[in-house]
Length: 369
Image (cartoon, rainbow, N blue to C red):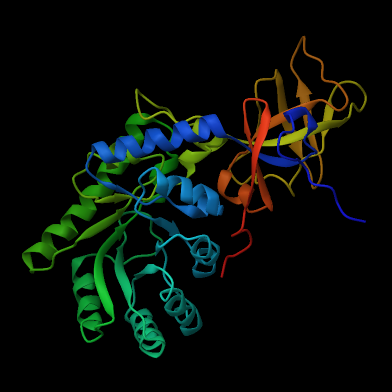
């Protein structure tokens, strides 16, 4: 037997089998245009993060709108984007061994590749791999501006890494990566503003010290969907790495915005009511194998009901007072966290108004090496 597709071109939303990951093309295109216009108006470059969606068609749409390239978080994740024709990819992370350096050096045969470092051993792996492959790489030194994850502490460590980099002509110092992920999810607008300023101030100190030492940082890359409105005005960054803005999720919707850049919900998980239980609840066919809930449960979109309990294959939805749900009713759910939800699906069903217009492979799904 062959499993029929969840949707075909021209289908109405009512025809889609569930669970299925959906993209509202009208909202998606407005989100792309809004972000690109804001970044361009600030005189910066946009390098959106593809870990948010793992879908080459989305990356190509962002590049067509003006993005200079994309970010990937893992080397393997970049491969489907290269195959799709993306020519400029930044690995916004460090590599942890020589094997990954070899894969990155091979990828550099097909696209302009860059990668982060925060240790001299990483430079050694990259130098050997590119020497053997006969390729070149751009190298960014990551500085820790408050994430307390990857990155060196400050300018002294940057300068030591540049000394280690200098003998390797195939490795070019391209600039700094300065990313503070925790800022993205601080709820209060003022709280997020202050945290973003503190992070960019830390980056500015490093830049000033490096400049005084005669080191020019051509690019400073960082920022995200939750902080972009502040990062654009910080005077530190030259390119933005925002990613989640293309689809948005429950977590970002919880942030407080004050006349800020506005992005719409474009990503949904289509589900259907498969049981009415004892009549006090509805059970839908979308659970943990269809939705990531590390940032909370999904929202039921434009329906007076709440998704309250999740299990492997089921979700319990409680109708609010005066509301009744029906067996086989189609419910659209806004995922709690878009990035890992994309990683649970093979394809993205793209609709405009009520019709399926495209089906895009989520080709980088599962590529986390």
